[in-house]
Picture (cartoon, rainbow, N blue to C red):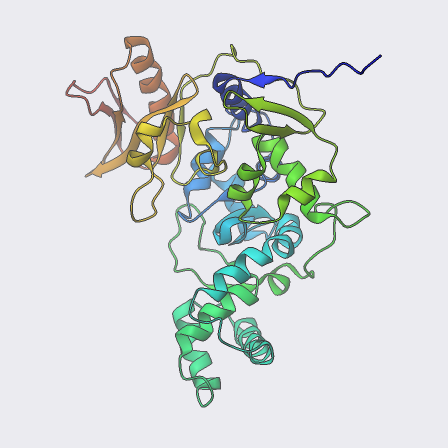
Length: 389
């Protein structure tokens, strides 16, 4: 008797939305330490140095500014170029484990940066010189370019090109007070191994006994962003060749409504499309919006141009019923901080009230030093809430 083939389950866009929100800790706030949340999320994009604070506040119960600031000053978490060659906030363990995995992405950036013409031997000499300089004291890229020019200028007069090369060949941590809430500092850099006192690679975050660190990273991505296609994995990580990686993994297969194969970790609960999704405020550059090739599970195509700007900024957004429904920003005038909410479409009164209530809580966190707070919707209607602190 021929074997009966079981059809691959189809997941609707709404089911994928709820699965993503659940794994991104956005269906409810979680009672979890900040470091554990950062590791569960496989890092948080941090081009805007303070955006992870709001990202953690919107996901965790009782999150305080010092919960993250202390991780950075205590060297338990760092900001470093990782996935997509962009700055991420990660745990110290993940910094050391993930940087070797994504190094091919950063090498690819090097080849297109204008600094990729240096021979391998030259790169080793530049790396050694840069490490020695930054172990003396943390340096900005401008300072590093000057110092490298002074040290190596007879052979390579373009110090800026050398500094760009160092960004790729040396894993550079942006040290505090950069990224510390309430502090202000230029981005100054130190080699990760020097800052953390440990070498790259190894540790529980690096992979299984077979050393399949790329496969381990894919499993962690799926646990935080899945179910997802191979193209989604590639967009999140920047890595190529992932199809051969997933073939070695024990994964569950689905399809989306367009027939695209989606993969997932076997232990994940099936998504519940009818789960209630509360309103949420996401910061700039939140990975929720950046980690899939097909982003319709979280944002409609017609809204993407308003969120993803031509100069590379990913704007802060609101979620209504689980989907991106508008933008937000905090404006300060005198002693007042005003949260401005710009919806993409008219909102029901109950939704406006929910956003106003959550917005007041956001102001209490993100503008805690302001004497007074206000919430205003940019749709021609008067402010719905004004509070004092």
